[in-house]
Amino acid sequence: MEKRIPESTPVAKNAILVQDRRRALMASLSFDQMDSRQSTIKSAYSTTCKWFLEHPAYLDWIEPQNLATHRGFLWLSGKPGAGKSTLMKFAHNQADKAKLGDEILVAFFFNSRGYELERSTGGMYRALLFQLLNQATDLQEILDNLHHHDWTTDTLCKLFLAAVAKLGQRQLKCFVDALDECDEQQIREMVVFFEELGDNATQSGTRLYMCFASRHYPTIDIRYGRRLILEDEHGHSADMAKYVRRHLRAGKGKAVDEVTAEIQKKANGVFLWVVLVVTILNNEFTRGRVFAVKKRLKDIPPRLSDLFKDILRRDEVNMTDLLLCLQWILFAVRPLTKEEFYFAMVAGLDSGPENIGKWDPENITAEAMDRFVLSSSKGLAELTKSKKPTVQFIHESVRDYLIKDNGMSELWLDIGSNLQSLSHDQLKRCCQNYLQTNLSDYIPQNQPLPKATSQPGKDLRQAATSVFPFLEYASCHIWNHAEKAVSPTVSQSEFLELFSLETWIGVSNLLQQYDIRRHTPNASLLYILAENNCP
Image (tube, rainbow, N blue to C red; front, side, top):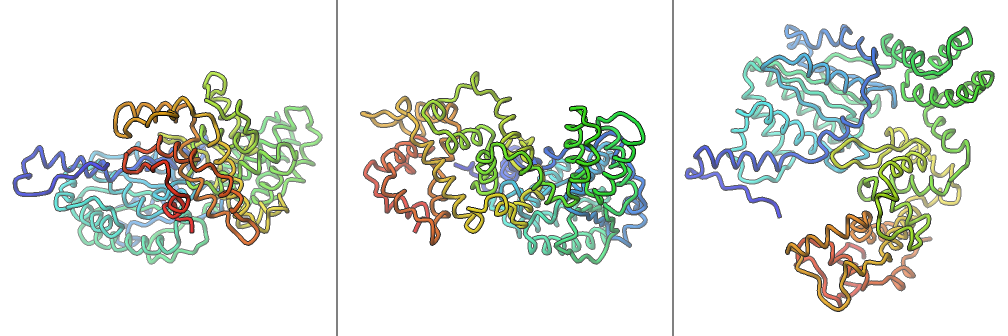
């Protein structure tokens, strides 16, 4: 239950209550994944990205005398995988190191692979506003007339405008990355808002700097600002050459120089392509196959999507693992933690009692799970570096290849024409298999569960989910996957006929935090389906 925000009344205006109320609103404004994407992005390799700080566009952007001309906007665009996010993280970190006493620095990195707040402008406004108010605590007074904490986009925009209006002569730098990973209409509205914000700041004398990064498409129409196209920059090409020379385990010589030059040429400005190809070529070098490197490089396709295809199809090993891995990352209701991911996979690959029983961390270690994420995805998935790490693709272009470029259909012809339906049906079966695990230690057979809100109820819930990490997801989202699986060729009739409703009710009741959310033992299937929006 959310903490109630004290009403703002004349009586509540004393300092202690006002501060308590502000703290409660600030806590409500923040969310766990605010900096998840930025934390996960790999930092710039040593000696790379430094050219950006000396680029004429960057120097013009940070020059206060030019604010009236560019209105504080710097736009960085580039191809998918070019390295925009790494450069933005570098620029943000450097700005933080050079920050003056009255300077405020805020940032948000969109993440289409994350939770809703990570891929919407609503989440961006919340994150930026929280950072602004957290650094300039005097601005928190704008919250005093707020009688709710329903963080709508309209409310957040008004608060952000009010906060910037109170900055006075202070300087605010704002970095927003991956605009293309948010809904296109939301981004267009956001650009209009920031243009208004820039106009207001210019008129009031506030030094407001905004650095945005996105792909070339969708096209974002802007009135002001300096532009920089990443793959056209000499400094970017030089960075790729530095990376190859440092990471290609090939020694020295004319042949190696030729390989380095060819990598740069084929990369066509896409840094991610370089990173993946260097890894592939190093495998040849470590096996002493120097003679094979040039041929291997020649065989590697220049397009990023074709390279992903090459990586996934090259060895044809554990393709069943790969398919299920991709289905979970693509179609899960929400991103899975590595523990959830591991047991979700096991439930689909080998759901014997010995495999989906209680998790023993000494037997199945965190390191083993990390390796499984890497191996099952053939290196195209990773763990985020957030408070609660989740499994995601190494780059949004992987998802683009699998869905937009029909990579899944090419890899598995039998599911290509009905990918979404068949995938959700498979994920439903994983949930169903996991729910069949033995929970007799946690669900008493002949006595009622302790009250959900009681300490014994909380302890029982915690004990069960700690040794059955996938239990909560399986219980909560099996209906969602079953509903999305329905298609002219995929029926759920047999699933509903054989489904053990009694078992599901027991698990669901165990996991509920409030007694009112529990079901009676004789709740009907029709009622459960209606409750879970399954017509």
